[in-house]
Length: 104
Image (tube, rainbow, N blue to C red; front, side, top):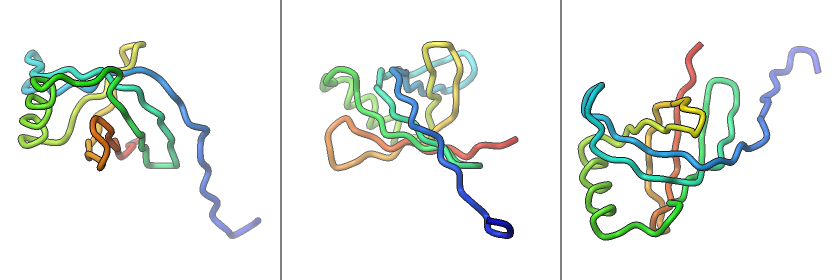
């Protein structure tokens, strides 16, 4: 319809990926395998993520520590593409909401 802005939504993309927390370009302090379901709208990107395998106590402690430092992780896909995401925890154990702003 002319003059009316439409929001286009992509079909969700599902994949296994890795959440990584980098202290600097050469030091990764944590890697966590997750299954993600990604959706995008113009200028925004979001995903639901769940741990591929149940986390150990050590995994959970490490993740909580890193989240306390900064909730921004690198999400790395199997093709080695990456996106920086903000991680938010949900009420369910090892379930997360990921979000990112897309820049041209």
